[in-house]
Amino acid sequence: MISIVIPVYNERDSLALLHGEIVQSTQRAGLDCEVLFIDDGSSDGSWDVITGLAEQNPQVHGLRFRRNFGKAAALAAGFATARGDMILTLDADLQDDPAEIPNFLQTMAHDHDVVSGWKKVRLDPWHKVWPSRVFNFTVSWLTGVKLHDHNCGMKCYRASIFREIRLYGELHRFIPVLAAARGFRVGELAINHRPRRFGRSKYGAHRFLKGFLDLLTVKFLTGFGQRPQHLLGAVGLVSFVLGNLGFLYLLATWIVRLWQPDWFDPIHQRALPMFALAALVLGAQMMSIGFLAELIIAYQSGDQLPYSIAERTPEKLQ
Image (cartoon, rainbow, N blue to C red; front, side):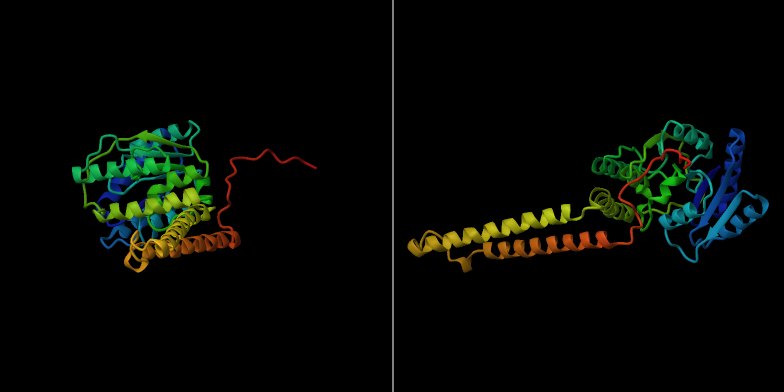
């Protein structure tokens, strides 16, 4: 069975049409599916439409948040509720085409654990398209996960991924990156993108700043999540060494001034002591933070194991 998870935030007008297209696509392909609508605190009556669809269709289920918690929280709730072996996500605004669902499953069959959609021909204004391309290039470059469209809401996953990945904040767009860091195989599929028919976009310019900050978080988690001292300690050690070199230079010039007072300015008239002291303090702080981070990881409860098991050999009878 495939579980289709759809975050909803003020999309009343599109929900019935979207469900109809999903039913048409999955029935044509002979797929057994459930549809999960996660109402993320809508105020336009979206929940009334969801409850109506659930009453008329046994494969439709809904969850309603008490307030708007964000797309990552909505997806996390959907993943926790989904019963299918495969989980497909798409947005509720009808820009993602449900006719692509069988294509995702065919691509998943080619030994993939995650398939991300790629809006190759994107029908959005230029001021959304070009910043998104810069963002996607930056994510691919920093993480090594080469995808054309990390922001695409239409993706397909094996359910086993979400036993190892925990979503929070706005990390939903980086699920393929987090999965790749755990050893899951990531692929891509060019999909049909449609113009918006109802409502308005929920994303503004502020999301790119948040996205960049989230990217730094993901880079740290995937690169140094199990060894934070390798980053923090390295930065601290370099700073500490530079600070010591600065003070050694000041000591040497002070000794020289004992015989040749005109060769160097007095120490209290130079800026180097302040920079050297700041480098020493920064270095000590960074290394201390690194040690604390290592202690936290060493004694944490172990929510996420430092490895990922793909399969086991069959159990043998004693």
